[in-house]
Amino acid sequence: MSAPLLITFDSVWKSYGEGEACVHAIAGVDLAIRRSEFVAIMGPSGSGKSTAMNIIGCLDTPTAGTYRFMGVDAGRLDRNRRALLRNLYVGFVFQGYNLLPRTTAAENVELPLIYRGVPARERRELAMQTLAQVGLVGREHHTPAELSGGQQQRVAIARAIVTKPTLLVADEPTGNLDTARTHEVMELLTRLNAELGLTIVMVTHEADVAAYAGRTVRFLDGHVASDTVKAEAA
Ligand SMILES: Nc1ncnc2c1ncn2[C@@H]1O[C@H](COP(=O)(O)OP(=O)(O)O)[C@@H](O)[C@H]1O
Ligand SMILES: [Mg+2]
Image (cartoon, rainbow, N blue to C red; front, side):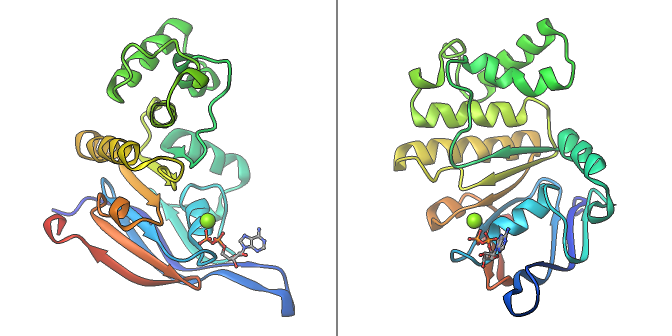
C-alpha cells in the first residue's frame, strides 16, 4: 500500500571546516520520505534544516553516509548529473519569491521551459495553464510589482511546478506573508499535494503552517529529534 521511497538519508553527515573549527551541520541522520508525502521540517536556527534541504534538493552532497533520491545515490553523482536530476525532478520555492522584476507572471513561469527548449507556443500554453492552477487567472500579464506578496509567491509556485517535478522543496515559503496570505499559500500547497501527488518538503518555523503537512520532522543540533505523523494522515 505504501508509496515508493523518494528520499532516503542513511547515516548522513555534513561537516564544514576541519579540526577544532569543524561543525557538523548534519550529524548521522536517517530519514525516509515516500512519494506524495507532505513533510514539514522544523527546528531552531542552526539545527541543520537548510543543510538537509540542500541535500534533499540535490544542490549539495553529504560528507559521509548515503543520500538516495529516486533510488539514485545522488551523493556520488558529479555536479552535472546532479543538476540534471534536479532539473528533471525538483522544483524550488523560497521565502523571497525570486521573480524577475519588470517581467510578467507568464514570462516568469515560462523561464524553466526556455532552459528546456520547449517551443514558445507550448511554453505560453503551459504557463497559462499553471497560472490557472494556482488561481491567477487574469493576472498573467502583471509584473511582480503589480501583484501582492501572496500572488507573487503563487507565481513562484507556478514556476516551480510548470516542469511537473516529482518533488517540491520549499524553504519557509510563507515567511514573508501575513496570516491570510499564509493560509492561501498553504491551501494551495495542500491541494497540489493531494491533486497531483506532488511530494512536498517544506521548512517552517510556525506550528500552524506545519499543521498543513501530514508529517513533521524536527531537527535539533543536526539530529532528527522527532518525527510525527498527523493522526488523520496515518
Ligand atoms: N557553508 C557553511 N559553512 C560553515 N558552516 C555552515 C555552513 N552552512 C551551515 N553551517 C553551519 O551548520 C549548522 C546548521 O546550519 P543550517 O543548516 O543553515 O541550519 P538551519 O537552516 O536549521 O538554521 C550551523 O551551525 C551553521 O552555522
Ligand atoms: Mg536555514
